[in-house]
Image (cartoon, rainbow, N blue to C red; front, side):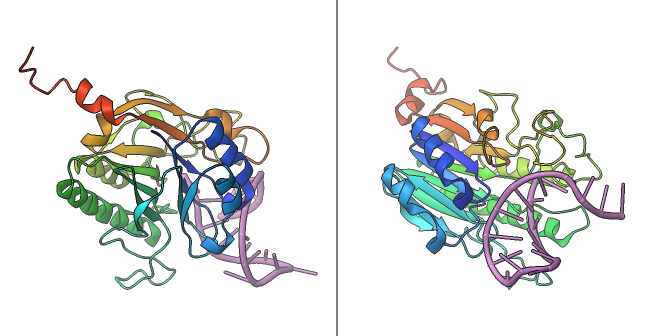
Length: 282
DNA sequence: ATGCCGTGGACACCACGA
């Protein structure tokens, strides 16, 4: 199975190159973020013609997540347990939920397409919301792994966190002044890993940005950041056989500011390659 | 201190993004 995640920054603007990429790269499951539309506005036609089912969660022009899959999806969910909401001047426990999470099961693999809140600035209520959102995601994920440890689980998407200094090539993003690199955000990311997930791309590709701002020649100068990840449970991570970051998708006509991240996943390889299993017959 | 660019909708502007 080839699984991709891509913040497309408006699916209606980029449906042609999105579907072309999925077909060209033989993608079985494509998790999208920032589709920026409601389900009734989603361009299902080109996906269907290319052989993809699509599940969509979008409430308005903001955020929005979707999953395209060659195999049918089951157990579709539009929020995780305890997911907080947010609205301007409405940060309490009854704040409305945003369209930032979509879960589906495909061929026995549980996939979540996630668009983590941005945070906006270090003194903004949106950053408090971001940290609460990530904490609830950690709790929900730990419970999901505990309930079904053998079922491969992948949390994929735009995490809006730069975990390590090497992931930051943008001189305008500075520890102490900017979101995405604060100790609190990084701690939230590592706590998510502590719940039983690993970044399955980094061991294969230690370097590589996934986002370059549209402004100020960030892409030509290669002043990008790494914020899009595939985090897998042990059952998922053990079966990953390859990964790629598609920098070329930042080029050409009307690119998204993010590029796709692809993981090759072979359920048969997990047990075969597991050095921890006792070789009692050898 | 702001715009730099790009998106969608309430569209002689706005909010949002990282």
